[in-house]
Structures are given as C-alpha cells and as structure tokens.
Image (cartoon, rainbow, N blue to C red; front, side, top):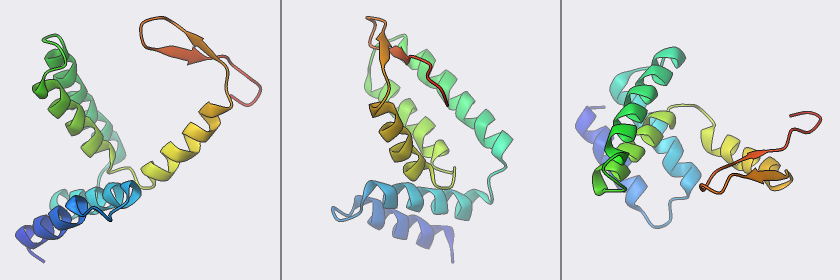
Amino acid sequence: MTNKVIHEITKTLINSPTTSTSEVFEALRIWGESIFGPGEPTRLIERAQEEMQELKDAVYEGWTDKAVEEAADVVIILTRVPGLWDAIVQKMNKNFDREWVVRGDGTGYHIAQDGG
C-alpha cells in the first residue's frame, strides 16, 4: 500500500463523525507505523520531548494557534504508544478516586496513597 493510500484511509477515518476517540488513536498509531516504521520506544520519547520543547517555546507567546498545533504534535507522537487511549481511560478512572492538592495555578498533585 502506498503512503498516499495510507494517508487517505487515515484521513477519512479520523474525520468521520462515527469514529471514536480510541479508534482515532489507533488509526494514528497505525499511520505512524506505516509511514515511519515501528517506533523504538526511547526514540519516540525523545521525539515527543523535541515537540514538547517546541510547545514550550510557542506557549511563551501565549495560547496561540501555533501553541495548540505544537500540543497536537506531542499527542500525535504519543499515539504511537500501543493501547494509549485505553491506558488514559484507566488512569482517569484511578484519578477520579484520588484526593488532590490544588496549587491554584491550574495544576495539582494527588495525595500519595497505598499502591500509588
């Protein structure tokens, strides 16, 4: 299958109103594997860090369209992690049961409990 065909199939799938978020994540993972080859975990982390730095640099100018685009780049790279969407759902269900220390700057930390 050519890259053009892979692009078109993925584009159609992720733009469909009936595609679930988990299906979008899986489509992007498959797209990345098809276009770039299997992701070596350490290199994927390094690549995400490169994009995170671009996001950080862009945010110094505010939440501009450029910053949002850089945030999208980070997420797109992270979709290469197999099972990521399911892990996000599982992690959020765990987070709902936690107690939080709110910092007042839009962030917080969970209070350590037995089992993490």
